Image (spheres, rainbow, N blue to C red):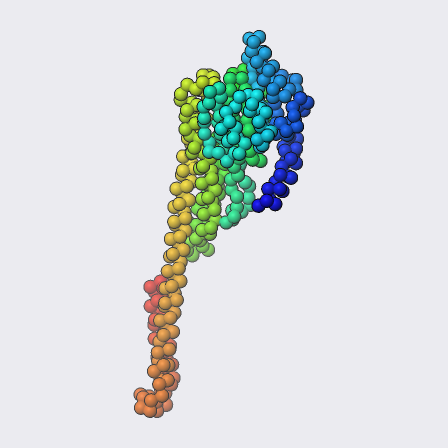
Length: 377
């Protein structure tokens, strides 16, 4: 285990470097090395437009609050990728983030949730990515999960991303093209992240539906047109069920946070933006119903597969029993005539041996036809 930790520690900086190249760095000249290694983007938005000046998180916050004193609307959006405690501590202290929320954001592996602190909201989203595969096997990874955590304050939003998917770069660019929406502040960004996350669930649900349809067709299809079911591989069904369970863990716990954001007045959430959370909640409800349906359907498919396996075993046992009964006839007759008594019927008869052989064949043939007619052979 220690070797694995050392390997991860050695590889992590390279991964962050590649990640910053993918997102575009902002070149924080005034940010310490520990902080800049985790920050993939930091910008101040004034009146819905991004400030072109390259700023550190502390400088961006000061600039926004100075602009607020001049009656200008503004907020800071900081994006981080898998920060360590040391990398996040400076930002957490500058922005006054709650220690419990900071600990959750650093260590990840959290359930989707919404927590309210004095001056901020802490929201956790589970991102889902569908893993393409040529063929579903007993070890196929169908869904891959990540996390996006959001600290939403009056004049800032800090996003912390874990995992290789769930990129927010395209989302940031799309929002920057809509200043009228960004002027609504951090709650507009929070809504956009929730909307993108749930839209990702919809796409993954459609892909998982195709995998389930494939397994269902295999289980209930006729084999070579002979009226026998194909059966399928129970391990593939079980693996798919495990992946659906992972999907369910991402979707179901998010229901309550989105209902809170869409149905109740929440401080720090613009009332105009709150209306849009209702649409996201509706989409999430649809996905949740699909995932619950997947779980029930896979249970039924697995039970049908096991029942088919039991029927196939019973058919095999009937065949073995029928052949054992047929071969018992010559065994019994040969056993009787192998007892070597002096006085036995037909021992001295010229046609006794062929007659016994003919009797054995006749009895075995009759039994074979009877078993065949009853479906045992």
